[in-house]
Image (cartoon, rainbow, N blue to C red):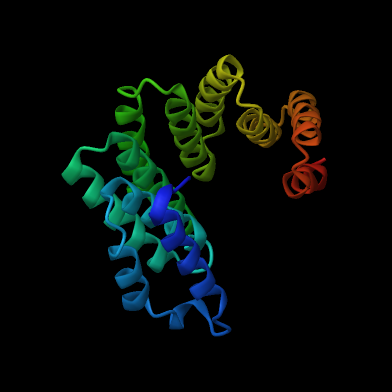
Amino acid sequence: LVVMNCSKISVIYILLFLSSYTVSSQNIRIDSLNRIIESIQNETEKINAYTDFAEKYFRSNPDIAKTYALKALDLAKEIKYIEGEVHAYQYLVNIYLLVSEFDKAQTYAKKALNLSKKIKDKSFLATSYHFMALYYHEINNYTEAIKYYHLSEEINKKIKNFPKLAGNYANLGSSYTSLGQNEKGLGYYIKAVQAYEKSKDEQSLAIVYNNL
């Protein structure tokens, strides 16, 4: 997410503020971070800042990430910023999948998908299909996961979002392999490797190679 103008300075300051900590995530002073974010005047940029930090913490501290995602969601609803609302829902899906609260993950995935259909920018819809697929993947319903991965793949091909398309391929490889369709799974893994090599995403490339 891109935060523009004076708010960009604020977000950079927050990142520097966080990097100075050597203690665990649980000891981060949330109130201090909130005060810094609250200093951002533009509400759209404030929502973007909240979702940036939801992304930053969703693995290391899901509770902190959820706090930020919910703040983003509440403010986005208040000012009718649909794109911000969709982003917040998507981060909440990530968080609830991580902590295995699958019913909540499904609820937010559906909300993200429904709202994304109202946005002209089709990248939102592609990502929401992908999150719905991730939900089905995590509950081992690989057939449904494949359906939604393919829907995401189709859009990413049309809009030429190649990094996201690589992610579609990698997850399709995993899903087909989980169904015992190893040859088909391998084909998608190879597509993912080729796509990640083009985008020079070495971290994702290493993950795919690990699955081969």
